Image (cartoon, rainbow, N blue to C red):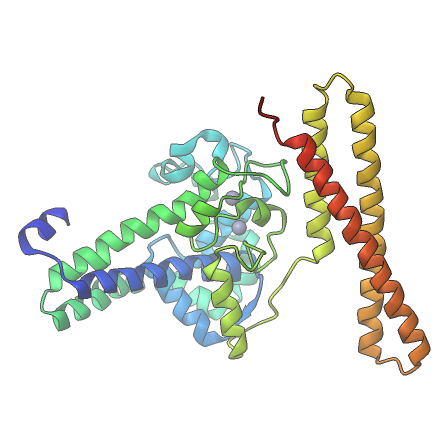
Length: 353
Ligand SMILES: [Zn+2]
Ligand SMILES: [Zn+2]
């Protein structure tokens, strides 16, 4: 490819085509293989499924069935070296690409018993049975025709086919390697998965991998609106046109609880080194308990309010009272949360002399 570019040049159409196919095939993996089929975080219209199945085959990462089977094992036995197919505990190289270069788990190769649901999906089985022809036609056919239209078949195949494929491979592989090595663990530390905004930029939003490993049935990986997660935006946008449905989200309370638990854990770990550790830890624990209490009060009031809204309660006095109570609890929770955050910041920010 570099030789071709040096001797024959490269044009803008080839670069744009490569970029478009980079996003199309990469996001067929993240939105299709990963969030739709492996984790069933939403439902999709058959047309969307076919497009994602073709895009996924074009990314050359094995069939949906095989990929999802591996991936479900990865979640179930994450970091267990002899079970997790791309265990990060075996190092960067192995989890990135080494696991594919030899048959490490040959006995499991055609065992799809953890994907019985997918075996009932016609699109999945069609793609599995005709995997190789789809791969060849998609990769050489599409780029070949585009190259012919552009007046340079080989150039297009090399740039929008081969070079694009290498790029998509490595950004996807980063999710198994770097996203288990580099970043923060705000939601859980029971596995190696990390949250990393920089990585999210290169992985179509999959860099928020710590969140993903604890709440794998959420269609989002970056849960805040400002977090770069184009896969989430694609799924959401398609839902406005009825092309995706039943987008699953983790209840806010559970997310918040997981995060707080980790903060308490990190705080305690840091505070034991203080001379007055017992006293400080007791204070932090007290504020934490208070916060958890206020939080569950607030969320149960919220739940009640939502349920009442659905029932459309007519008794306005009752309604006013519930509304008032809800607002009160919300304010108490917000205040306590602010207090907790400033306490946390105070103890966790290293004091520079
Ligand atoms: Zn996953
Ligand atoms: Zn992972």
